[in-house]
Image (cartoon, rainbow, N blue to C red; front, side):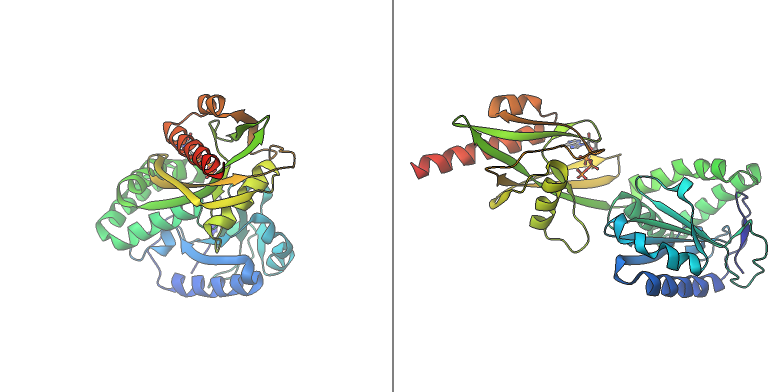
Length: 319
Ligand code: ATP
């Protein structure tokens, strides 16, 4: 059986029926959402056989972009999946349900499903699925998680938020030490000639650092498609990509995401650049030395030096 009063915390023994309910729900969601859902998965405690859990299914729906899902909210609602907009965030749309699932759903406060709609292959999707996979693979680890949950449930039976916050350190430690989460972004060193000199486009992104336009690969995209789309979204520029230049480096985000960034070269001759609202907070077209100074990370400076060297040599060859 599934179902628990909202905002309460009560752990019950794992019920093998949960898997059946989850598969039914995943099929239903998949037939409503069609190709807008790239992948749908059960995550959270109820996905880990053998450990006590809240009797609620956490289902992740991975989409390419949030706008893909907008037309389906009325259909979801007609099947009992209600969007709770107050619980949405930049990285997640939130839907809950109170479906029978072996129980009585007459109490409107009861919850059987939390459906998290997230961008497939990005950090929220990667973290939830990786954490769940780690627990499933390692019974000792999942037992430790169960013990922590039990002590938190005893402390916070009426306070789901504190219960969830109490688990976060454990989750972070597992993500850092046991999961190998990889993410990849593609972009380009965008340049143009101005007054006879090469100028480079530098942007300041949401996290505050100055670098080149780039972004996460969407499901099914090639590296080149990602670079062109991201440059357009972040700067409004349509560029010509030179894929014979490839500069790549790796860095660690939040202590557990192994991220790689790949840059091509891209040129443009006309068009006005404009920063993407809410994502890009500064945008500059600068000569090489000034661009070098504007960049925050040594890895980006290395990429810019390589780009400048390559373009200077191309120019020499052409003369
Ligand atoms: P994307 O543009 O790929 O969608 P994002 O905007 O989510 O990515 P990143 O640019 O990857 O974010 O930045 C995430 C974190 O990593 C930030 O704290 C940023 O300062 C840091 N970071 C970015 N580039 C580097 C780098 N070359 N070396 C070290 N840390 C970096």
